[in-house]
Image (cartoon, rainbow, N blue to C red; front, side, top):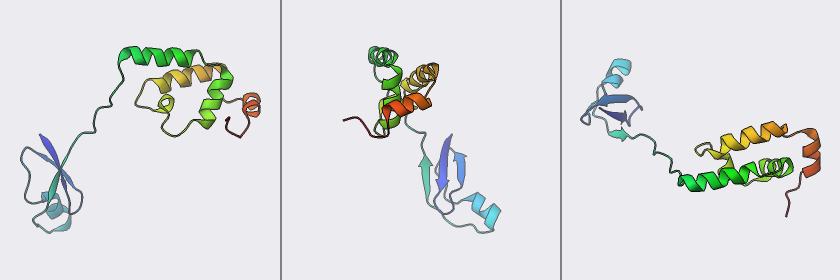
Length: 117
């Protein structure tokens, strides 16, 4: 079964073949018109790196100090792989950082508000 989106009002319908009319438009709004439909595709599966690369990055995360983790947490560029929820690194980073106590007042003061050069 495929999902189709009515381009007139955004209704989603499930059927094998592309529909010509949106029956939901008729039910909700009393009008029946030919509508353009677009197939709703599932989101692409994330592309994971090979397991040996994942293991190397996790070992790297596990070797970081509390200060290094806090610095990354505060100053990492958008899209940094350690903070990508689609990859396993985020969970490992969060668990280790939490074990250190997270962003404590003391560590926050130590790393400051200016990114390192």
